[in-house]
Length: 506
Image (cartoon, rainbow, N blue to C red; front, side, top):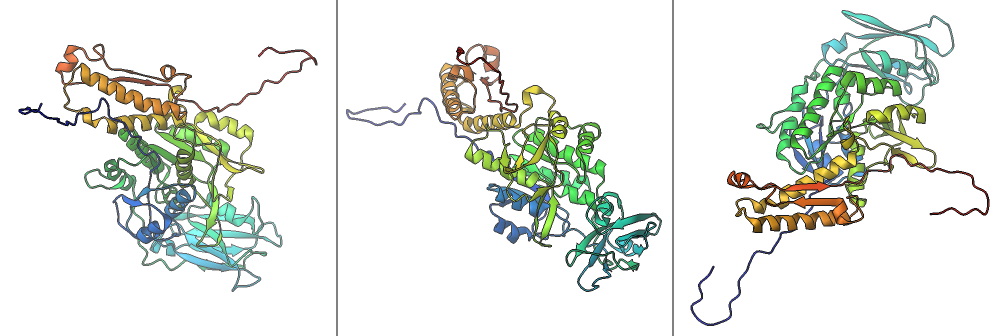
């Protein structure tokens, strides 16, 4: 206190009774994946698509990172952090073209080896007559030294189960195949082609450890520990590595488990997990329940893959939904608030789905925390699930988890001034007023359940929570309870007949 020695008027600045808590941001995504160029293993802030292209390059064949980031911004995402791993862009693959009988210059198939380098160059593809003769049927035989031949008999260029691209995509462990030069009307010419062109390609050598990284070196997930702003994490390129055979299903599980562990460790972000491609409803349920069995309130799973326009080919391509979903979360937070479940929202940029599921199939998936993306006639493609991967009913809903993240982080950052203050009754009252004011605003925003503030939250900071032994230990203990709003996931209208003229009491 200052000392006054002469008469006069003096002005003093004093501390207010409480300090306001400002809500933290809830919509900053982090993407870890493969890019054409740019800084490696360093979280880089990106605020728009043009900035991503300038830092990491445009769309790249064999990579889903650019599609994910583009979908994030398209769906309403703002800032995000990108961690590029693996150095150079995905390794080139050995290639060859099979000509069509109709026009060898304009139509045909491009065949790519899954293995780059000399191993891919040793693969040969032969087209011969089908065992059951037909105008559009043929046999495709794939040979590689030291590996069993792959034989696709009675395949066709027509759409359907017997389509050669469909068969190869589902079964082949050696090649991928795609149309080039427009639709193919007739079977390719008989003959044999050896794949070539990848002698100097650099094989992809990524392992789960590249994703996990190290906090000290600021690499992988570890590098994101220093970025407090991140609230969601996606790893879309994990599935491109799985498709190339660089990482197997066990590796996929190891990386996804690591990203979930990272979110649990940080306690302020949620992992958006992708399922492998090409699964039907029963298979994705078995993968989720029997093979990986994730159980975390800091993770969510979305399925199926979505179809988007691929600028590289000018055609539709299926991509993991995690990037688009992160953008929907951001848009939902901006328009409604983090307390609103990010579901029943249109996925912008989605042209279709890898699989259109039925309500019966959805009934089997939703209880296991598989958030389905569905197509509704006249209503577009929408996210139709809002669950975490937790078996705990208290943390079943995604918006509840994210609301608690918001409240906890806001209180953590907004009460730093309390540290080293005198731990007395005056401080207890100031802390209570600060927290009550913040939670009152949160309740008025519609994030808490209750007709009155007393029903929605409570703050307890007194001699009961802070007995002498706690104060002597240098601790200040504050109990805070909030009642989050839950989504109306199942809307039931009970409709009955009644006699005309009869009155019903309200």
